[in-house]
Length: 276
Image (cartoon, rainbow, N blue to C red; front, side, top):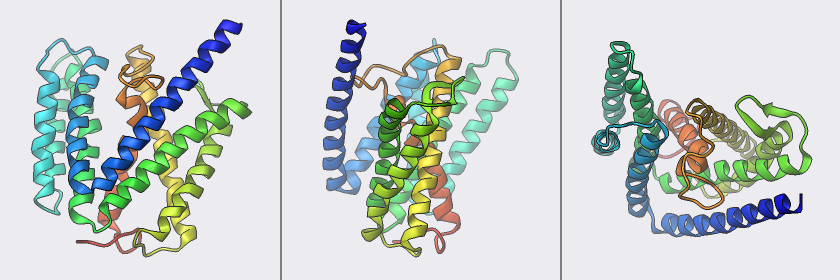
C-alpha cells in the first residue's frame, strides 16, 4: 500500500513539474504575439498528426504527412480571407474520406477523416482568430486558460471530494464534484480576462461564457477518452511526463475552439469581439 502511495506521489510531482514548464513556455509564446503562436500551431499539427496515426494504428507511414499537408493547405486558405474558404476545403476533404469509408469495409478512412477534422478545425480556428480579430492573441490565451484551469481544478477537486462518477463507462476517474468544481473555478478565473478583452457583454455574461467554454472543454475531454477506449489505450502518448500525450492535454481546447470561433463569426455583435 505504501508503494502505491509513493507511486501516486511521484506521478503527481511529474504532473506538477511538467505543468509548470508548459505554462512557462506557453506564457513566453503568447507574450511573443501572433507569429510565435502560428509557429507553435504548425508544430502541434505535425506532432498531433503523428500521435493520431499511432492511436489509430495506421500501417501506412504516409498518413500523418498527408494529414499535415491537407491541414496546412486549408490553413493558408483561411489566413488569406475572412471567409470560410479554408474550412470549406477541409470539410470537402473530410467528406471525401467519409465517402471512401462507405465504399470499403476497412474503416481506416473514417478514422483518417476524424483526425483531419479533430486536428484541422482547431488549427483553422486559431489562424482565423489571430488574423481577423484585434484581440485574437488574448482570446486564445483566455480559452487556453479556461480549459486548463477547468481540467486542473476538476482533477484535484474530484480527487479530494470524490463522490458519484460523471461518466464511469467513458472516464472512470471523473466525478460530478470535479465537474462542478472545475466549472466554477474556470468561470471565476476566466472572468479576469474581461478587463483586458474588448467585449460587448457584461461581466456576468462573460463569466457565463467562461462556463460554456469549460463545459465544452469537459465534453472534449470525454470524447477523447471515448476514442482511447475504442482503440484500447490508456494515454494518447508519453511525450509529456505525468500527463501522457498531446491529445491528453489539448483535448478540451481542441474541441471548444472551433465552436467558439463559429459563434464569434455568426454573432460578433452579441458574443464578442472587434474585427481588424
